Length: 430
Ligand SMILES: [Fe+2]
Image 1 (tube, rainbow, N blue to C red):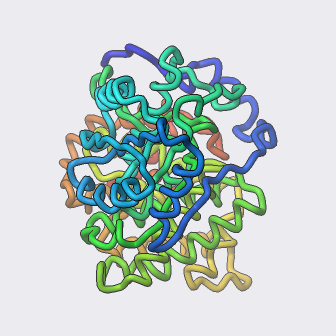
Image 2: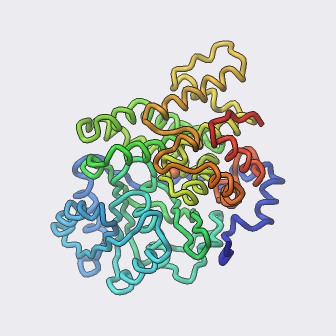
Image 3: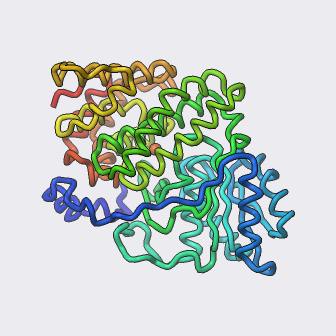
């Protein structure tokens, strides 16, 4: 395994320091709340174009539209409004799933030729994440983003790109409202996901229009919806929130429980469910983006990359283990029982926890999604292959940025044990 460029959160002294702090002592240092201006509904795109027209002089009005081979079909819905507002544009549609670093280089090259003053991403999480980092590298080519500790002073982005706009075509990643981007480090073998979190990466404008999500196939609806659920539940139980963040996460969970089954079942035929899931994804994005996701995300990043499993399916499958693990040190999960139809009453804690986790698993199963590795069929995973890779799974999870601030401090051995339990769905008992 090559180790070309470790990130700041893989430095041993950082891990040691966070371990000493019990994983929560820097609470309160980062206390700002960030959100884009969010336009909802059918006039969102034209409103955004008007903002560009008003905010940028005509001779400098240039927008780079970033998309991929699947979502470039939506570009015309945006370019019509750009034409009307006299915004010149160019389209880069080469973003690949999970964003290899080569995509960033291609995007920056186009920026240097075209000199955009706005970037508009139209796509799922990968496209929106790529747009953030293309902007970053265009504005600050000298910055080593592997070492970008998110508590640093502002870098002064937006000198070249005045508006970063995100238009999601899935409902789950929340990237349209967060300060985070996940890329694939293709300099390592095997490839590893890595996160860049930086306050100035929060888009300036997000547009939630169901026209962009109505055609999502059921698999994508399910996967991205489970991602939103994991964001909100993982963040809430991880105990990093404020009452403001709690409100966002709780509402997001309620919305997902009510509307994801409908969106999955009826798709384009249920615009109301589509609309609520679109909002739920952004609510959860604001929730975890202004606090932290749970360790379902460090587990899922590792598992998803090593076995090529959809991100949302991976984090959804691993969510019950993440919650079961944190439940040893927090009662936050109890607040969620009523949303899943569980009466708290005077039940024993262990009984209640089991009921809650069973209800969570039942919900995931109701979407034809698995809650253990052996039941995964998209793709199927061979047990020997899984066991052979369990050390690597644990290592990559422990080296994930999310892991650093787990409410319950993590170790490689704990991750290994969780992955062992996840093979056939054993309840966490340690
Ligand atoms: Fe996620």
